Length: 507
Ligand code: GLA
Image (cartoon, rainbow, N blue to C red):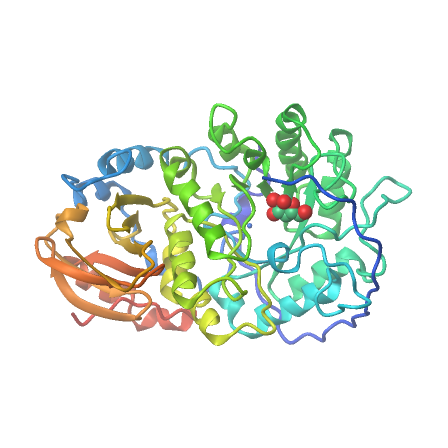
């Protein structure tokens, strides 16, 4: 993909907050869609208030010095190899539209609201412009936007069953009476972005009109004309040959519109997610993110199923990720019905380790405060959004059911996650930083969910972490000798930027 939009990398945009809210009309229902076949983005953070500023003293070459990996029961590639390979790949191969240099964050309708089109009987929850405006209001007014959650993404079942007289897609007129351009303006006026859904096939998974190869240019232009910021292109009702042609063609077509539109490809999910059918190098060149695997459902078992796939295949998927090109393990279901608080913390931590897009699919109008606290945790967001964009890995899978994850971060920092797959009681896991391949002497530790510093820790000292069943302990780790620099980096000058995740400077 060529690069007409690279200027956006450094662009800033401003919120226009407090504009009058446009009038909303209530849509009505319509016929159910045809039964479907089972199916097995943010531009650069444009405003002051991002964590990127905090993590700006990047010295990529220093990782292998810092972590002279020597030992530990590692799974798959040894960390030293990982770091070396990743150091070579950082900054190469990304879709060069300047978008999503850190994983996109926002809200996506599908998991929570599905294809509910019955606005007569379920006006609050049906797929209509009202739902997206409601979510936009919450993102803008409840502190989400400032944390980075800026995409509001429409999924399936938004369109009319017919294209218009010019062959263009059109929204359902009863449920989206204001049309998509007005909805896009609504988002943009609030410093948010609008995503939309299409499908490279005869029909969407929900049975709505698809984007066959001959319609790719038309649909890309329509989305650009409407002011769309992101496209998720699904793959129902298409075959492997169409996908091989269609996904790259849509990438080109979006680029040719001249509008920066982030591009989410479901292609690998339809090809089993693994080589040789899936070419991750190519995906990184044409898509900003991609769904590798099946759909998330509202349950812990679904989270575990996805988690297993991604970490069992980490040697393949982990190197594919980087700034502008992300693996997408699917939405966050935190705030819905399926997860306990411990499991919510675990999903968030594991998604941060994976440098995954953070698209919540929940009801922000009624979300409980504990889920909100997890989703708004500044430390875990900062880790997810680390500008190095190196996806983390599972280091250890203990027989006890404890699994340990590591992700290298900017400023010689890293994160460690201790995850328990046990179902009995909190487990006291004993280890040392040395056993986890840290060898720089003394480290400072910040406990991300307790939101407090722990006493500094020598790499050779054994410690015990108590990990709750289906829960995590998440640490931000950095070498003690960096204290002075941290004091500068995390000092009060940065506080006005709206994120107070500040590892302690007084230790
Ligand atoms: C597929 C996708 C989901 C969702 C539905 C919509 O199953 O994987 O994320 O978009 O289609 O029908």
